[in-house]
Length: 427
Ligand code: UD1
Image (cartoon, rainbow, N blue to C red; front, top):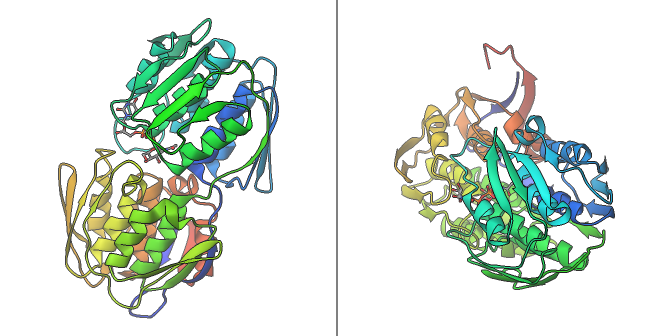
């Protein structure tokens, strides 16, 4: 099994993250953009695609659906046939949650879809009720059979849909269904994430009629046909935020190239409250920290609130901050499993329901720890940088799902991190 071996000492030995790092296109956008390619016959080209494991798996899934998918040099080309296959099998879908995003495009384009119920991160039960209810409002008949969602519709009809919660995945699926439905669909309480705006930009370039991108009301006038186009993926704000928090945690100085500060407004504001210096630059932003951070409270919320995907990194930051911080998780109930691993590194953290209270300590203490999901894994590596001695982070396949060359970038910023093979019983 592979682990990241992190050599700590970032604060005392003045090995601080410093230098430049470039953020690639967003994982949470590219997977949906790839699914959107199913909506139009012909060749869709996506640029600035991160070379992460999930992109490869989405490519495999699209091939299984009859497309050609070629990944080269930060670019993916998808050739969609006149009529894609509609069966998304369990062995591919179980590997990542975003596979559910083929549901909307397949029903819209082919009138049917049979998609296995997905897997993905271990961050709680991730229901699909809003995806299903929305498709039903549009006239689809949806059932669950032997671990598969089966949806059929002779022709989807525009509808008024109110989401109970601004779910990212449900907004995307329903948007991709609505662009080819007959008539007008209004999605109220829609998610507003930059990745949704990116999906709207691709769909509009393909010929879709969408109003309200980036607001909580999306109005979609269905069209008969869409055309395949080229598109550059929006930069990954969660990777950008990971580097920003890493800079503050290690009292370093990092220029995040291709990071969009407007997509991280609350997160960067929290870092400034912790004492960091944050400035926008031409094509990115820079974060530097000259002293131990002050403890800051954080509440996760749908965009534009503080992103749940940066919550583990913020817990790691609080673990070495001066003072007591309260972190409240409002999106994924089970995300605090990460706090147990952080406690193994000596963090003064207690959780109760969806709150965590962290008493900051000057340093953590290196130990073997395990990633439970992509972001928890990245946060443990960052925590290892401010821990005495060695921290071995196992289950790093999670980290590889979201970060391209994580250790390469860390090393370029001055960290001592190695990817090593350990026998399974030691990892
Ligand atoms: C996406 C991101 C994930 C991020 C999350 C919230 C991808 C691949 N993943 O996940 O990194 O943390 O947005 O920003 O883009 N829910 C329901 N019923 C539904 C749909 C969702 O109850 O029909 C619940 C979920 O269980 C969860 C919450 O709503 O508690 C948020 O889920 P959602 O916004 O849909 O997140 P994902 O699209 O799964």
